[in-house]
Amino acid sequence: MADPSVAAVVVTHTGGERLAACVRSLQAQRPALAGLVVVVSQPGEVPLPDLVGVEVLRPGRQVHYGHAVNLGAAVAAGDLLLVLNDDTVARPGFVQALQAAHGQHPHALLQPRILLAGSPGHIENVGHGLFPDGHNQARGRACVDGEAFEQPGSVGAVSGAAFLAPRGRFLALGGFDATLGPYGEDLDLSLRWVRAGGELRYVPSAVIEHELGASYGRASLRKVYRVERNRVRAGLRSLPVTVLVGAPAFTALRWGLMAGASMAGKGWAGQLPPGAGLAAVAGMLGGVGHGPWALAKRRADAVGWRRGERAMLEHLLRNRARIADFL
Image 1 (cartoon, one colour):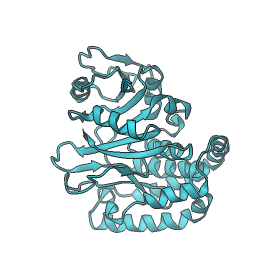
Image 2 (cartoon, rainbow, N blue to C red):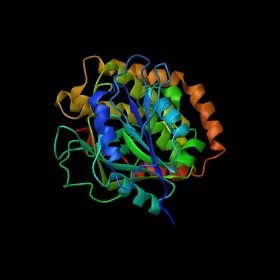
Image 3 (cartoon, rainbow, N blue to C red):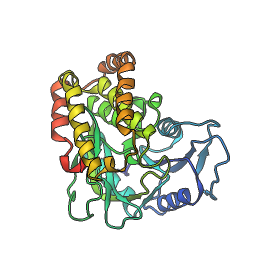
Image 4 (cartoon, helix red, strand yellow):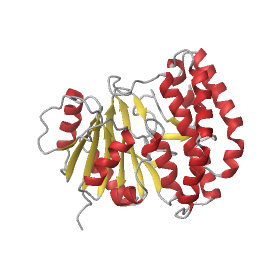
């Protein structure tokens, strides 16, 4: 029986050489991709390299990452859907390793080993761990590659920068929730995927490099606001009720950890600009304000849930974020 075919969707915000490098790395993969779709998320003149054998979608308006992926997924001709930022470069054997992992876990979203471009030998993330309030924290960021995370296993959420999904299952679930805008759409998809009975698996043998923050920047008040707002929206939609009840206390604890890390100049919190605390509070309140929307989505989703409250709680505990990842 032939291996399932893989089609890739790459979202580009700026085009140029960064996109060209990503496409070259994908076209060099063996076996060859069944298709490659590039979605241009900006309406203006985005400089595109000479893309031979690539289907280019131009929506003609600004579309955020999740919406752009959905547009590409609708036309990608493959059994499996490989989703990538344009600031990624796949190493040889990347697609083959993901295909092999799919054979063992056919209902899983697959998370590769993502290395930091420009920082040789260091991890960007190997999936995300989950804090009890639903916040997703990158696992392994800045760890030395080869010293940890060498074994495959479960993750709390996948990174939207690079993952493989069964295309039919992705489309049946509705893909990304385009109403979220940037940040947190990968958390929302991951939680809904688990609720629907799927797995989230880390594949260490599938290696890709990522230029972190190349499209939107690593840290900004806008990012802080949206991360917190969409974390609340995703949590209200999919987390267990018992977790939601205690979420405010856990959020206060997490903010305390991040404040300590920021004062020490460590972790992502150490890169945040002044006013990040107020942006986080505003984001949380914004997410609560979207509560009716999120709860309506929850009721609609619950018809197709295959994992109940206890199973989701076990997922959170099994894939909890490490304190070290904040620091």
